[in-house]
Amino acid sequence: MSRRLLWGTMALLLLCALVLLGLSRLRWEKHTMDMGFTDKAIRAPYLAARQFLSAQGLHVRKTQGLTVLDQQPGSRKFPARNDAMVVLDAYGMLSPARSARLLHWVAGGGQLIMAAENPFIQVDGRTRDPIFQALGVQVREQPLKPKKRDRKTSESGKNDRTEAGKPPENPWPAYKPAEDCKNLGHPIRFHFNGDKHPLDIAVPGQLRLRVPKDADAALLGDKTGIRFAQFNVGKGQVTLLASARLWSNRYIGCYDHAYMLWQLTTDGTLWWLTNEKGPSLWRYLWSVAALLLVAFASWLLVFFWRRGTRFGPLQSVEGRQRRRLAEHLDASARYLWRTGHSGSLLEALRRDVIEGGKRHRADFARLSADDRWSFLAGITGLEPSRIAEAMSASTNDGDAFTHTVNMLQAIRNRL
Image (tube, rainbow, N blue to C red; front, side, top):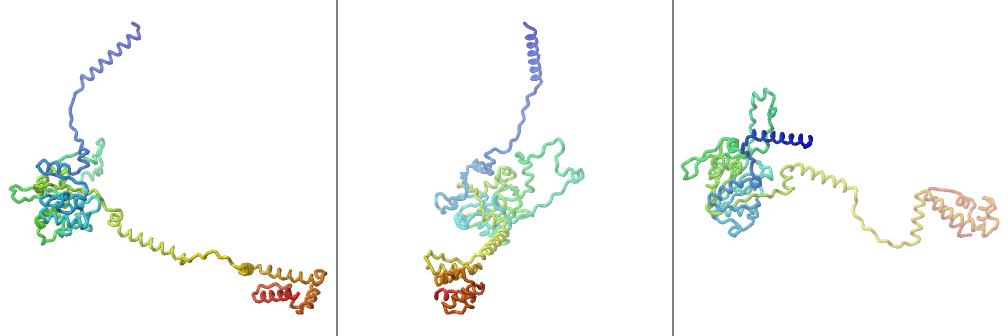
């Protein structure tokens, strides 16, 4: 065995011994880590509530959207009279026709549960819903009270900053029932008819219901306002809540929330409707920026009005027609006169006069100017001074130009 192979074998044995020593010192421990809600629970915020009701023997029928409300009451696709219906995320989105069908169905014995929430619009005192309006209920927003700052924290200067060495708080905390229920605040205690023990519920959110004082309704609330209102409509009931999140996956296990939901249902089918359609773009913009849209429309109207004033009325285009030669000559003469080239018109007549004189006398071109005008005067019978003025004068006056043209034409015609 060579020296190199011997040292390699010893190093490998030493490495194996170290690995075995390390493994012998390891201690196997099991830890349970809360990974939060499952993907299915995240996609369905009220999954736990529906599963709880199904475990109680209720037939829960989940429907995405509100198309069920477009059916006529009494049809197979519409809830029966002894059924119950939970409508979520639909505040302010129900049309008058759908609201009328719902109220007609409730009057026949249905149970309607609806919350004043809609994630697609801003719900405040200005937002209206036909169901709530029919019962005289308004929704208002309770302002948040400023939290008192911790004196020790303020003096230390940390102010919500994490301590050194500690990781920041998880923005999506795991499900902790004790802490979640405590964050809901002080619960509201009440009794159902026939129950011996009181029930406690805590409705989350800052929305409150405003119910008329003379309304015949069962109300639940605290010093900040009403959270729950139940009305008798015909043979059925309408239950309105400030928020339905007390039945969400995070809060369904708090206090008596699950038992309350079970008591509000009937022995028939429970229809669980969730609105998944937001308002149109124009309706949303009008709800959040109505004044801005009015200002923009006004500016647009003024802009097009100003741009439109530079254009006159529409005129019909005349067809191409053949014109007479005299019209073309007249147009050419007018153009030369406007552009200051009227002398070219006179030169043509003067050349005709010179050519006529040459026909009467061969040496006419060699004569002096005075002799030419005298010769032409003898032939035409016109005064030499008038002929001299017509043959040499230049004028920019319209009357004088006309007189000169007439004189030159008279001379040419007599030659």
